[in-house]
Image 1 (tube, rainbow, N blue to C red):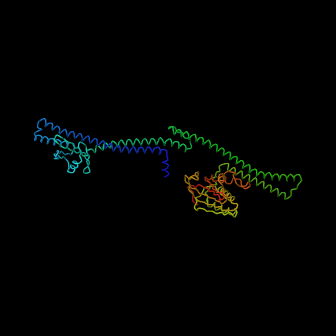
Image 2 (cartoon, rainbow, N blue to C red):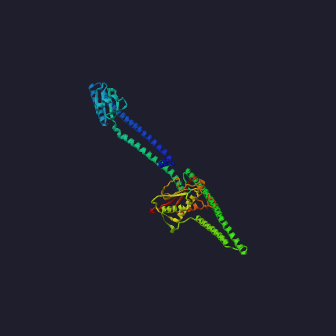
Image 3 (spheres, rainbow, N blue to C red):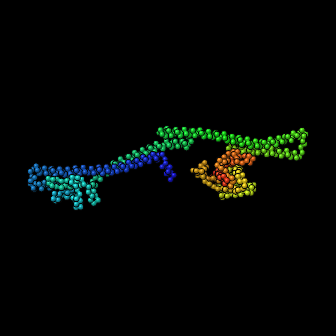
Amino acid sequence: MKVLRNITRSLAFRIIMPVIALVILAGIGLYIFVLSSVSDFTDRHIKDALMGMSREIYNICARNLNELLKTGAASDEKAARIKRGLTIGMIEDFMQQNNLKGIIAEKDNEVLLAYGLSPGLLKIVGKNAEHNTVSSLEYDDKKHYAYRMQFEPWDWQIVFIKDAAEYSSLINNVRLAYMATGAILSITALLILFYLNRSIKYPINKIIASLKAGEQPEYEGIYEFEFLSKSISEMTAERQRLMKQIIEEQKLKGIRVLATGVAHNFNNMLVGVLGYASLISMKLEDAKRGKQTLQGEDIDELLKYTETIESSAQKASGLARDLAGLSRKRMLEKESVMPIDINKLITELQRLLSGTFPKNIEITAKMNDGLPAIKGDIMQLEQALLNIAINSKDAMPDGGKLTMKTFVTDIVNGNSKYHYLKAGKYVAIQISDTGTGMDEATLSHIFEPFFTTKPVDKGTGLGLATVYSIIKAHHGYVIAESIPDKGSTFTIYLPIEEKNPKL
């Protein structure tokens, strides 16, 4: 149905279909015209032929009468009877030569000649044949043409009959001629349709092909399509210009957010480093000047200061590593890529979380048996799953339920909800929580570096950004869905290689 709807909505269909309808109507009209024309032509031809035969028969009678008058034997009954008999014989010969059937009768209905007529046909002729006109008669499922004439000098009624089958070849020839004309018209109409179809579809296909290839259409030819091509080119160029402008603005915005986040995080770390370094410096200066003697307690306090400085430096180093990972495209090292049993990974993660997460958070796992192996870096995937789990824990401060699922799914082309997913088979990992959830505005920014809804000292905003980077490095996808006050669901799609064994 969808294919049929696309065909009926196409420009070529809507232009060509009226032409096809007109051709069909013209064909029906031509067919009716042919039938009526053939009938009129054959009737006219037959009537003319029978009228010509009637004149010849009349001339036969007239010549014999003139010969009788010229010899002066018109009053001689015996001579006149002989002459009429010769005339009847000549008419019979004429009928025989022209494949006619006929009857000659006197005024008192005495039959002088009945040639080739059966009693039934003779009866029908006597009732239906009209004077001085061609009559159409039906007898024994056959059609006949009859003509009745009168030769007044001798009071003769002459009726001759022609079988309609004699004209079948003529009728067939005329029909063939009209059929040939109709075929020529039909072929001409089809050629016109082909030309129209090509004239319409060629420029449209050329314009569409350029757009699909990401190029600007450059069609020259029919004015309307040329105007359309130029308009689309101008709009495409303007769209590309605006897209470049938007991308540049987004880059600048990202740089501003990144710079602000880096400055904020490093400033918090440096405040601690500088503060404790200053305290150490003050105590050491006092000890150097002899104002204060360093005792065991003082040394322990200085060690705590140095430990705090060291911890802040390590945090700064970790932040720098995370930034370095985000600033370049994360790559998988060959030596770290191996077949991974996702179910085993989820089982180990469940054991880890059950021992470290608060007891008011229920952790469950629902795994689909027989999952294909996934090639990847197990440490990176574990980190990505742990980051999501920690994010879910922080969203359930009063406890809740954390559910992890694994299954195989088949993504097909035309997925209206996630159209950007590449078609194919994937192992899916789904992590759901019953936490506070997120609104649409928050959900649209969660994978951005340094974006966080947590307090300043609770998070850096790099956890989900790292998840996104790791999953992309595995040629997969991560999708977040959330409803405020009901919880969030993160679904990771990892592609299955066709030769991957099932574990």
